[in-house]
Amino acid sequence: MVRKLSSLEEWENIILTSNTDKLESILDKDVIFYSPVVFTPQKGKDIVIQYLSSAVKVFQNKGFRYTNIIKSNNFTCAEFEAMFGDILVNGIDIIKTKNNLIIEFKVFLRPLKGIEIVWKGMRESLKKMN
Image 1 (cartoon, one colour):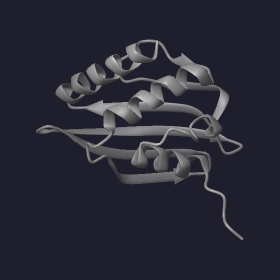
Image 2 (image 1 turned 60 degrees about the vertical axis):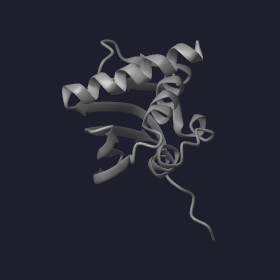
Image 3 (image 1 turned 135 degrees about the horizontal axis):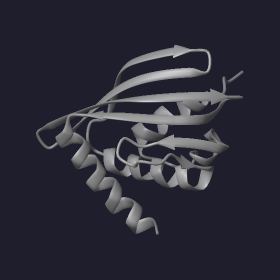
Image 4 (image 1 turned 120 degrees about the vertical axis):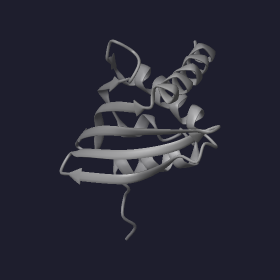
């Protein structure tokens, strides 16, 4: 019998392969996304899909990898890094799930130059979607 991937395993597969086809199937309809640069939380599946799809595009071909993952029941803290030119961007995804669906997704980034580079890419990607 083939084991079904958890929503967190699916997310890691999405970010590593840049294939966002399964994104809708791992998010709760009331999911909330907390961006490292947007003041207000982004609420609802449609807008969160836009943000996460943009993140996938921005991190594509940047050597994205999770370096440390801590899991506890329905809570995961995953540290990652990626290279943007000569700048190593380091961050943390804090992901909460319920019934194997992501209900909350928070992203923290460092250093400031990394935040600026990622935000510029996200802004451009989001503009193309609208």
